[in-house]
Length: 223
Ligand SMILES: NC(=O)CC[C@H](N)C(=O)O
Image 1 (cartoon, rainbow, N blue to C red):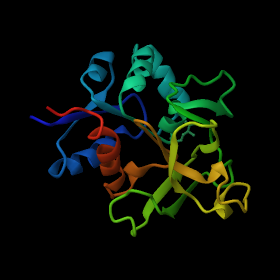
Image 2 (spheres, rainbow, N blue to C red):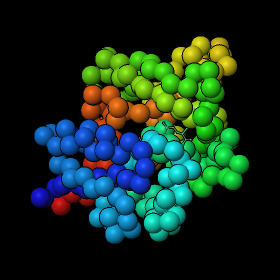
Image 3 (cartoon, protein in one colour):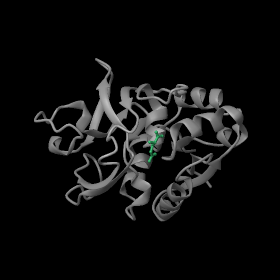
Image 4 (cartoon, helix red, strand yellow):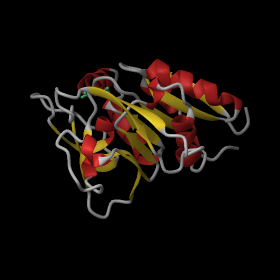
């Protein structure tokens, strides 16, 4: 179909089916085709990609075994990619709290992120978020955080736009400073979007629409 973009969802492990459902709901208003990506050939068909939540070390291992690791790194270099939760870890430049055997990253976003940054006492929670740039932005988006990572630091001078934060009193070690990087739960850098929570688990398509509008349709030529 003319003007249609193909958004892939990395489908090795984790919540990929839920992302596909959200994107399929958007098809009435946006010209989107979805592909579940399991091989380098699947990836080649994509104009943009979502890396879902799940378990970041498992996803990286399966990506290596299926020959996707290097193609993914090359893809991220030039195309829009959105990482949610484990996907956000994989998109980060560096990770604190990696598993003992290390953590393979894809990079693309200039942040240091802590795996399981909420610790054991608050592993999962929900919080209403004000998201800059979302449609109907007066209606909070419910963020579902499941063993979520925490952004620890942004690289100085990286062109990062913060689009949602938690209030500092909700942090694992509560802070007063509302600019504390650990409050950041959604950000954009160039073509990339990173969310530490799971927008695909909420019956609200606005975050998927945001990715389509801000990262995909603005950058992918649709002829
Ligand atoms: N919900 C998630 O994606 C959790 C991420 C997981 N804690 C990891 O390290 O990969």
